[in-house]
Image (cartoon, rainbow, N blue to C red; front, side, top):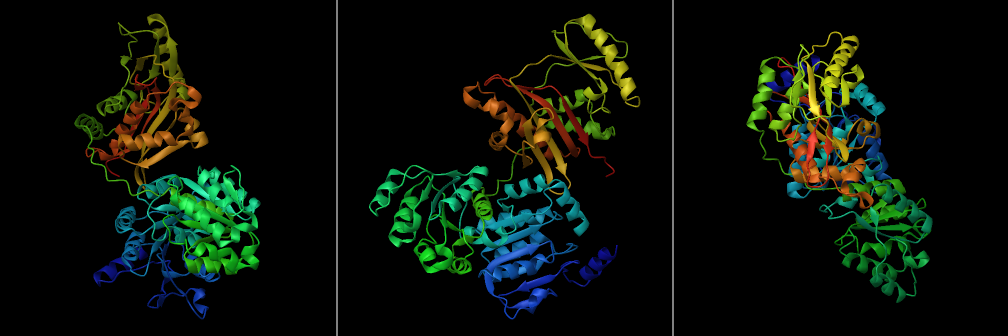
Length: 586
């Protein structure tokens, strides 16, 4: 209440507020400082060209302190605080427009005003200014600490990360990256692939980097015939190993030039990694000087220095080459750069009128959760294939003309997990067995969920597929509408094996999502297995994502689990689904 009063008084006077719970701002270019940060006890605050907006107050001083030790500086640092007025995205957009800032960094504990972040990110992409983010709260403990520190719920860390990815904001996993990665992306555009070349004067150090690159799905390219011939002319023989180990000869300028010329000319290489051993500490000019002329070439160069080599790190920074102290931070920054994509265009799809009408009817009736029959009806209106459905009412009469075998399920909007309540019977062979199964279902549900409203027993033909997928929709409280696809059943949640995007998505993006799910390798023709109908599954993902566009009712959550995926060209079928609506009074 006090914060709201403060905001209202400021607005009445035409004043914008940063904070509260802010450590202020530091502008090294003017210079202008409005902060009580202890880092101001330093005699000099060096000028740099990286801007930072942080939801953590003390981070600004920590980065200035750490950066000054390795010749890395900032243009403007803003501790945004609780954002009762000025938001992260607003400051980020100011930094995008700032001629003294080349790269914009975000340190996020939550998303209070996602629309301003989205606007800033799209503006940054339009003017060619890279934006990077470190997101706190990716683990359960991290979310708990973020909440206690800022008074804001993190919600799903994966949702925020997906939100940023979709906007072309590069994400860093390691704190060191906030210092070291900006030099890598400064003045760059997104890469076209995920392939790197690695040259080294120390095999062990390079192997460590290669390990971390491999863990992140980055290909280390093997040397070409052209490179072997160029190095042979320098008296160096190399094999086919992906890491090019030059030994101490790698400090000779002619050798470095031969490698760089070949790598730059190779369209199959997106970035170049150099790993330097002891010479980085004892002969910094020898270690770094051969790289300087290639610093602003067509392809980015990064350097991991194996020893403690402060002078070499400073020389790299002066030359505009990203230098790294650890193999983990090196791989993290390269991964962020190679994962960078332009913001996804805003979708132009609309929600099918019949689906919106069905949702409107449920909302008008005050329904919180739709029954499975009604949910599948909405999905069918969206274009999702669903099975034929019949209902056994309270009198127990079995419908005629069913194609056996069938499955019977309790029909109740109050029971989300029907199996747990004994509400599902599979493989029913005939009408007599179906009548008995319906009675068993009613009796079991009455024991397990006596308060549940029962609308009957839903009957569907038994469907088969080569794999099961889950397609879900959720309106995240921070990042907004999200759509997901993963391996069906509970495995997606157990292994966290699913792909997530802001909704809605088109079928092309849905295919990319399916490609990200390891458990769906079976339908991608893994080891020569028959392919599943990926195109049909992508259509389901895109269709479900359009629930974000409903004007008649706000869908808070929806799920199809499973979607049975059949062989390529034979389609899919959604055999179970749920839809929950946001209460109209909320």
